[in-house]
Image 1 (spheres, rainbow, N blue to C red):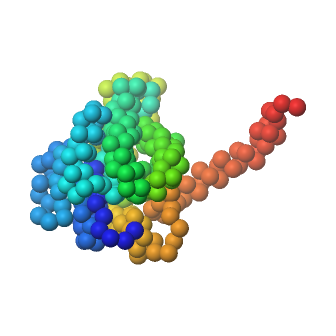
Image 2 (cartoon, rainbow, N blue to C red):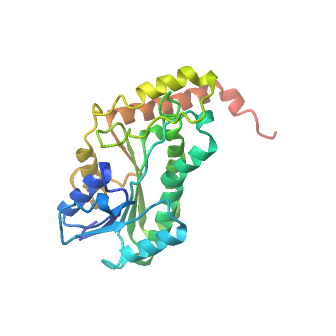
Image 3 (cartoon, one colour):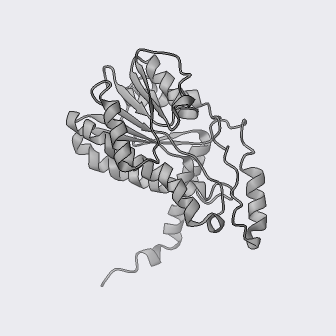
Length: 284
């Protein structure tokens, strides 16, 4: 993708979003950096190719569309959308319940859908664009004892991204699903374990989760700067992505690779072990 691009990035106050903003600007592109609270990004260095905008992905569909329409007027469109805003609410499934799950899905899934749907008309008009969804390797490993609740939304994002890629292909709009492992970003493990509905049978599991959820903070192996540099490379077809076929999935990190390989092997083993049952249900 040659030429100067206009990026709109959600969740830029910290983590991947903040780094991606700086890296895209450094490549000569234009960036509309958004955050739920504008004051959290007003410290960004002034730059002629940078616009700051308040955007709460939990807002109504109508409000999100109005904010995106306002953003698109800055440079006559949006070429690259990065859905990065999101967070994890640690809890056990039965204890957290539907109310907590809806909060998780509202931000990490429905917010993504609303932002995408607001941006896509501008990309379809140009018959060109890129939609990036920052997901997680936990889409492939939701059965852990610590991240089982917060990771439940990630398979939904994975399936949505795959469906979106098929729908948008005729318009020359590409989808990139980024599936990072454990990276050393700020506040990624900042939400406290939800204990509002303790069920005695889960006392041991809850205690384990509360102790271990935030333990990796500050020791994660992944370098977020390297990861986001690769995202820019892929979007622009430069650096490590030059000459390569477009990847729908961008897996980042040895731990993410291991989890995905393990999940694929687990499913394939199931198909082998139960092959006679799997194939024995056709009408004859």
